[in-house]
Amino acid sequence: MSASSHSDHTTTVSNALEFLRVVGKLKEVKRTGWVRSGVKGAESVADHMFRMAMISFLVGPKEGLDKDKCIKMALVHDIGEAVIGDLVVVGEKDKQDKITKEEKQKLERKAVQEMCAKIPGVGEEILALWEEFEAVIG
Image (cartoon, rainbow, N blue to C red):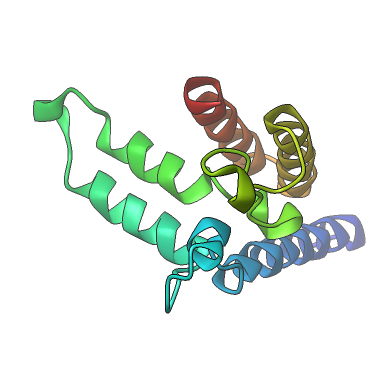
């Protein structure tokens, strides 16, 4: 392995580990709406994403869905919250953050783009899945 390719490999691995470190923060981010509603043992964003992925695993062509794509979307749809937190912009006014839905989307998009830029190849897939999800629910 040449010095250049060794350096590229090290950077790639380092960037992947940094991406995983940031995504790992989702285990610590509690779902804000649940916390503000006084739910004891509120689930984390990672808990929520895992449950959505498992629900997605149960569906398939019979339901007219692409199971693999649904699982991937479930795993990436909230990754930006690892950077910006779980901001609440819908529901009861007293439980919402003081930010518009558009401002939240802008912050989250920037966070996801920056995270994905560090992991070429798979980063583009993650960003495309995230953008598609946002286009439907945003």
